[in-house]
Length: 440
Ligand SMILES: *[C@@H]1O[C@H](CO)[C@@H](O)[C@H](O)[C@H]1NC(C)=O
Ligand SMILES: *[C@@H]1O[C@H](CO)[C@@H](O)[C@H](O)[C@H]1NC(C)=O
Ligand SMILES: *[C@@H]1O[C@H](CO)[C@@H](O)[C@H](O)[C@H]1NC(C)=O
Ligand SMILES: *[C@@H]1O[C@H](CO)[C@@H](O)[C@H](O)[C@H]1NC(C)=O
Ligand SMILES: *[C@@H]1O[C@H](CO)[C@@H](O)[C@H](O)[C@H]1NC(C)=O
Image (cartoon, rainbow, N blue to C red; front, side, top):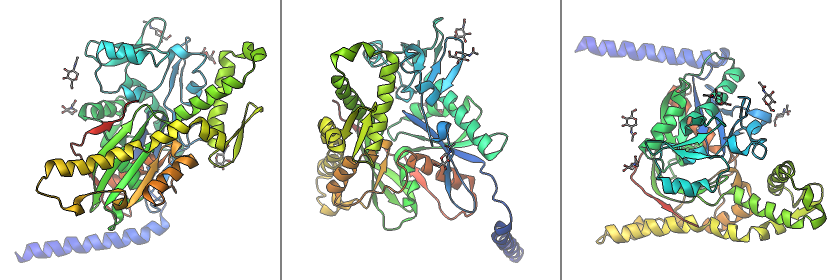
């Protein structure tokens, strides 16, 4: 009894010595290099981040062309060259049959032949169904095919090499991955496989809305109970209602529209511009010109988040007002998932707890403590305004919405890596909440 107590004291004593040494040591020693990275393998963009010990800062590793992230696109050229990210993006129009994107939509999911036939209409590359019902993509005239996991692993490999070069380390071996909240076990497993194919161990998989909440440190705030995460990506809009208690997140409701995203706004602008090209110049429309116009419309949309107008092809002036008019119907649809979430949460109380009409259990827009914006399309000023009006409260926008998930997944990596200063915990409890799909 006595000796074991002494043992405890001794251990406690040496721990304190170690901690004190660590505290002083950290002021003189260089910070240890991160051992574990955070990957955000997104539908349209992929990014990688690290959590720096001591400073507690997250750094998103610069990708190609000095951008934070790279497009989740892989292009297979006839001569065997494989291009990734922006380099692949440049070949969307010139190598359409073998430039593969949107693969996250297919990962770990089985499809019927009929549904693949229908989906095929959306894509210039060929989608096939293998004997187990999973999708593969044809990447060569000799009909070689590749799985969504393999596409994922090519993208992760590129990001991994960026980190290794950036940190000057020989090998990244551990990671945390983010996945959409609605991913089931099979989809999560398949996403893990993408990392495992390049010999990276996945320490944890967390959902994207939780990652975004971590990015804003909401796991550390006692007064935050409900968080609403609005993610408007290139092709999809997703809204998640999370509850937080003691650093533990759980999803209470999800709603989304997988036919509504930033690209739809570009597309409308693109079609509008095509109507401006007069008949005399119609013969100038070739794939390279279309590709040029696509890049210009995307850039114009981005410019409008800070400027009142932008110019396309040094010729057509687009004011923000015009842009908002062209996309009037899309802006209307943006708030729909929010309405659906609150309707669902409150109908659930009505349906399942008949003898519990405790009004305090209801969650309305007024009960939301923090709103987190994710995805580049939430930069559109009109969208921010619509959200602010809806909640009568300003959303969190300090972190670049393109990398909010990367920030969070990197923080989770830091927490798991146990790096100094180890002051917080954060976990996620999976719930059986079903996503509400809004079809269009
Ligand atoms: C990359 O971006 C950073 C920060 O925006 C800037 O300081 C730097 O000059 C850029 N580098 C290149 C090569 O464009
Ligand atoms: C393959 O083709 C691309 C584009 O035409 C070219 O840039 C590249 O150098 C070629 N690579 C090889 C190995 O021939
Ligand atoms: C098929 O084509 C790809 C790319 O052009 C090449 O890498 C591969 O070796 C070819 N496979 C066969 C079996 O010919
Ligand atoms: C597809 O997945 C569902 C649900 O996981 C399963 O019931 C079904 O058998 C699968 N179909 C095929 C063809 O594997
Ligand atoms: C996911 O992977 C784990 C371990 O690799 C396995 O035990 C589990 O059955 C898999 N689940 C699904 C749904 O594929």
